[in-house]
Image 1: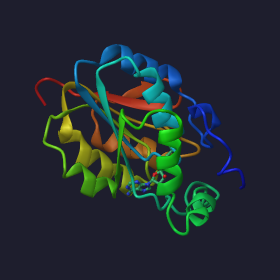
Image 2: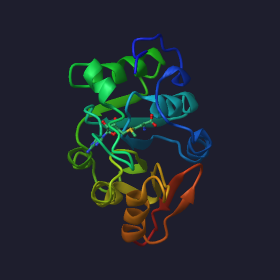
Image 3: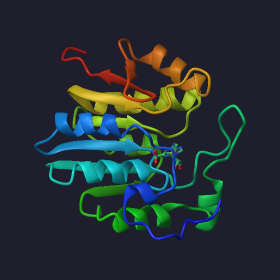
Image 4: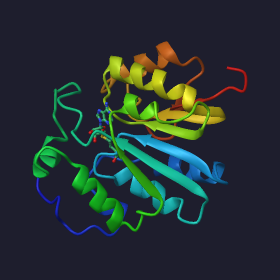
Length: 200
Ligand SMILES: C[S@@+](CC[C@H](N)C(=O)[O-])C[C@H]1O[C@@H](n2cnc3c(N)ncnc32)[C@H](O)[C@@H]1O
C-alpha cells in the first residue's frame, strides 16, 4: 500500500476501515462536561480524528491507545493489514498516527498513549472513564483480555463498545462479547455496546 505520506486535512483523508460515524455522533451528543473517552486501537487515526472533529466544541477528553506495531496476521485470510504502515515507519506507525492527529487539528484534543492495551488500562482509575471503545486485536483471547482490563474503568452508565461485531468475519469478537458481557447488544454499524449498570 502506498500513499501514507499523502497530505491529510481531515479524517476522511486517512487510510482505514472506519464506517460507524453515526455511533460517534450519538456518543458525542450523550457525553460531555469533562468526560474522558478512550479508543483502544487507533491505527492511523481515521476513527479518532473523526471523533475529535465531532467533539470539537464539546468538553471531552479523548485518549488513543495503540502499540503502533499493528495487529499482525488475523481474520479469515490471516491478513497482516497494518504491516505496510508499520514497515513504512521502520517498525512503528506511531509517527504517521501522530502526524495525522496534528494534521487534522486534533492535537489539543487527543492524547496518544503508545502502549499495549492491558498496560494502558492499568494507568486509569476504576470508574474514571465515560466511554471505552475497543478496536485492537480481534481474536477471542485478545478481546476477552481487553474487556476484562477496561470494563472496571468505565463509570456506571458509561459505555464499553467495540468494532467488528461480525459473526462471519470476526467470530472471536462476537464470542468474547457473549462470554464476558451479559446484556451487550449490537450497536451502530457493526459495533457492539455494553452500558455499565449502576449496580454491577
Ligand atoms: C483495526 S486497527 C484500528 C483501526 C482504527 N480504530 C480505525 O478505525 O481507524 C487495530 C489497531 O490496534 C492496534 N493494536 C493491536 N494490538 C494491540 C494491543 N494489544 N494494544 C494496543 N493496540 C493494539 C494495532 O497496532 C492497530 O493499529
